[in-house]
Image (cartoon, rainbow, N blue to C red; front, side, top):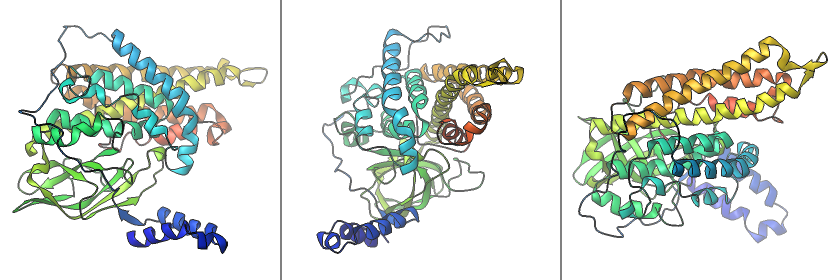
Length: 431
């Protein structure tokens, strides 16, 4: 199927086809093939190789324990958040509807996002980044600010930093030397953390994707679902059940034999251009195992990913609140603003209350993770609030707009669809 799509694509660009007046029908055929599930080879990735030799892995130190839980951002954090918020308002929000319709980010948008240097914050200075200590809170604030612009595009923007963050936290010296230099350059590679699978009641700790040992390393077989920017990604971190050891993480390059991609549009997150990652007898070297296959490493990746989704939910929920408040104040019925109706006012107040609760628990979990303290309980609470209240806030936003909430003229219907993903998504982002 991949060869067929490649041939059709070349045919669509042929001058002979244009002279015959057949360009449009052929292009439609290519488009239909993509929508209906053509499987194509992974993106032609760059050659990852060591730019320097490292004596030991570079890690970010835990943040200082101040003994206080203070939500006031530092000056640096405030500057970063203001910059990202401005970018989200000027670049992501206007592009969101088009990205949702076309199932991909507008051309050039993601390269402009990379210029913000989001990946640099989590990479140590000795590897070319700007990080000096763990920055989970800063990452949460950045995710929240991006999601205020658009959740789908925020996931697309944050996907590469999930991979670079995992490499910094759990990669060995060789893995860091091979892959991290690409994430501090001008051309940051598309990359993705692929945990999700299309399974009812999916449990990330019981992946159906299998990994078995071979004389030269490992072989992976399975399918990952809802992988952001799958068609463009050059590097994946994939979860698989390693025989005899349980769930583990593996570095998979898109150029590996047996890696194919299939488009997988979803109800929401359409701007993230989600796809299926097919792994068929993918041979990996022994050095592809991330974090030594330790159970505690896998557990922390799942927790930090769920924390990222909670931060994204908070950002989109804030977008809903900021949109419905002026709407209900300006929309009039029976000679007065609809906000004068008690039911409407209470519904808006509920959104604000649930949002503040979600943000408080999420930032508390991020703060504890940043300082190296236990944070499992706080992540569980954040996950529960984000899944339940996020969807509730999205539904309330649609309801408050009445008939206008059902049409694409207003963004609340898109935010509602996106917020429904919070309760089912695993991986993709990492704080």
